[in-house]
Image 1 (cartoon, rainbow, N blue to C red):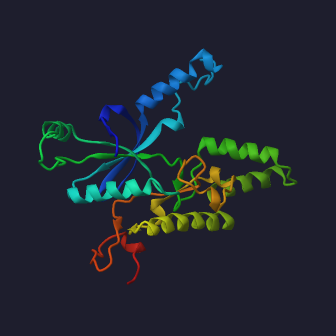
Image 2 (cartoon, helix red, strand yellow):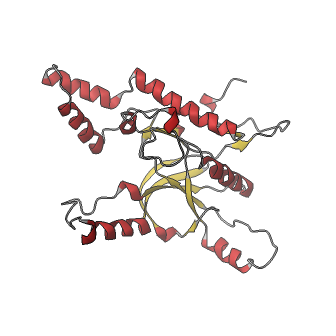
Image 3 (tube, rainbow, N blue to C red):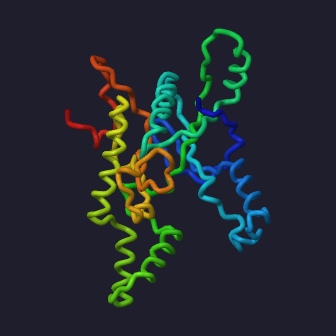
Length: 269
């Protein structure tokens, strides 16, 4: 039930990080980008071809995806992660899988055995295509991105304040770098919602840590309630729990490997 894509369908933009089991990249969905350009340049939409001005080469955030290139690992672990992601794609505040890029040799091998009963094998490592969170790491100061700077600048201009220009500048820098007490409680609430939905499906994440939590402070101002936490879209989701590579299904009486998660975030027991 996961669409199979080719590697040429995506254009890498930057490397996001690397872990023990995978390398993560940001990429552009080439097909969706072409559709967006056609729509934006269509006169029937009432949009001018020069709408973007000098930013004609700018990347549309809606076309961005995350590519998780898996390192050599057992096939059963790959299939387990795919199965977990399929369940998680229906839950709020969790990473959604959009497609999978299979190695060319495995695709050819799969076609040759389409009419047979032989078990399909993954000859080399696939790449998972995940939805882009458009957020920052929870464990680091929020990056001074131009888009966020412009947004905060507009909010500051609209709000009436009696602070001097220097005090306002310091307040702006501080608010852009550190989380307030309200924001911390707000994000922890959404993190608990994500974990609660996972546990309701019988899934253990087993690698919860700040590095695996992405937040979007732009979505915090909307302050959606628990009744709006649906699986429809991540556009207004202020938090996303990622990296389900170590997640597993809980079966009573089953002995699980305890050498999981990051050592500094593992429970003492």
